Structure formats: C-alpha cells, structure tokens
Image (cartoon, rainbow, N blue to C red; front, top):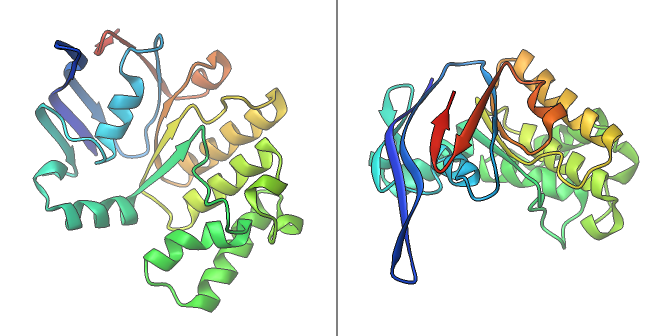
Length: 220
C-alpha cells in the first residue's frame, strides 16, 4: 500500500511561498487504479513525483508498505524506485542515442540482469507492444505513438509493483491513446497499482477511482 500522510510541498518563487501540495492525505491500496485530474498548476505532477520518491515533501510522510520512503538513505530510496516503481511520462524520457531494444534494456542492466537475459526480455516486451520490427530504431526514427510504446515496454521490464503515469496519452491520437490505457489496465489486472495524472476525460474514466486535485488539495 502507498500512503501520503499530511503531505505538503512548498516552493519559494520571487519571494512568495507557493504551496504545490497542501496537507494531502491519501490511501492507495495494492492493485488500485487511480486517475488524478485537475487544472494546470494544481499540483498533480508534484504529487506524482512525491509519491515516487523523487521529490521530498516539506511536511508529512510518504509510506510504502508502512515504510517511510523519505527516511531511507538516498541509495536505498533509489533501489526502491528501481525495483518497485515504474514511471511513464508524456515526454517518454527515452535515451536518444540508444535503439528501442537498448532503451528497454536499461532498467534490466541497472538491475544486474545478464546481457542475454536483457536482450530476450526486451525483445519479448517490444514484441508485445507491436514493435518487433522496430528493435534497432532510435527514438527519432519512431513515431510519437511508437516512442510511447517503447516507454511502456521499458516500464514493464522489471515488473513494477507501482506504476506512476504522468499524462500518458498526451499528444497521442485517439487510437494510440486507447492502446496505452488498455496496456495500463492490463498491468493493473496483473497486479500493479496504477496512479495516473491526466487531462484526458476518456482516460480518467477508465480508472477504478477518480480524484480531483485543486490548489494542492484533494477534493471529493
């Protein structure tokens, strides 16, 4: 289970304090699928990064299975992210000079998998998302939808317990968006917990729960 307890995140901007998150308490049970909606600047991406161990809160705690992740050492927190949390970003974050196959191998390499295992697993995952004929292509040689599918295959490489998706259907055509949401639903059915930030009403309705974030606060 993921839990936020009284989480606040403040920034100083030109002498003014901005509260990106304001006393957020949120329970996310295992195998849940939550969509988080709200206007731009409401704190959605900040919430996602804080949940994922990438942005420490100003106040409060973030717990995974009862363990406060920001009380861990930086090395242990990085290991937790690597082993248990997968990120899917609108900007894909693919390495531009690596092929699709090599991009999917990255988390497997970081986890210490042997080279033949990396290649086999990455090939299987790319085939599963319909890119068996694009293994050697670099990101610039792929369409936007194909790049997102490479990112999705990379996400699945280490079978994360938790998937944090930030606008996963942004800038995609409706058919490709539907494919991405179907992949996330499949991941959820296989046991992953999904937290998705989205502006896409169709995508938001596919989740088991929809939460609205306004002014850094969860609203019913």
